[in-house]
Image: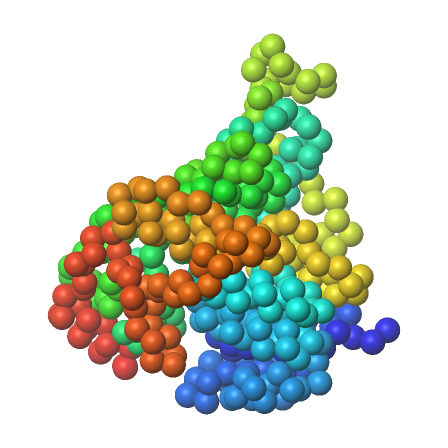
Length: 417
């Protein structure tokens, strides 16, 4: 059987781990990589992982390579223009993190996708973690009744004195991580609850928790918020409370889904265990009021899954993308392009809510031309980009916040060492 040929745009850490997940599959091969010429160290490290593949420094030349699909692992907020070029060359797209960095790009992505024959998949891996798969199984089985509420918490505090992290992940002042509003890194918290419940957000409001890192730590971050607390009203009448990438308390990912008959959640700090609970008057036959257990994978690739990154999510997401290509079908909610743009809209408009005192915003449906028209020129962004574009809106709830000159000078010195 002919193998699916994969190209990778972005040779950083995520490009490397995603490539490893695809290399575990039997029906594909990595054939090309594209990275900035200035990123020699990252490229050398990447090539040690994948071996002898074609190397490009120009994306326009890269997409002409003889391949079937592209993994977009470039900067977080810069995927849309490259996805569109892939569509124009008949290539399938596996897009890491948010699909579009601005609302206008969301419109452009949908319009270009609808003209193409390409398969598009958001490379969101957290719904494939064992406890999140179990939540979907329980919801799909009707064991919770009508779903009313869900929580998704991606909590990833960082040590402000971790100099190695700064060198690898925030290696120049204008790096996107230094301008990342806390609502933007949304898919790890929102994706799993969308997957478990089948719901799509239709309205968003948000507030931020402001607590800058200590003044004696090196930093070039212009974001003093520790978390964005995001509420959504959804198309099925349910409500979500989710974070972007939060930095409070202790590290961990936690999710909860509540229905009219019961609730299920994974337990903070308890690995892959879940707790399925019922009121005493609604306990299903064969169950207890409190059911505490570790789910089974029930997957023929279980041993390979356990060796893959992000709790097996990297392998399973890669496998699903390849299955979609083989079958010639688009991925299901929430991995499809419309779900991806909805999640990005929650991220972008959630931050606008933060900047406007929690004001609610409607989430557009870009299947509707009227909604597309409303946002087709909306290019507000908190980020710099590689082509010289500058932020047009603040990235922090305290709009005048910035690191001190001493913090920035120390941070630059560390990175240069």
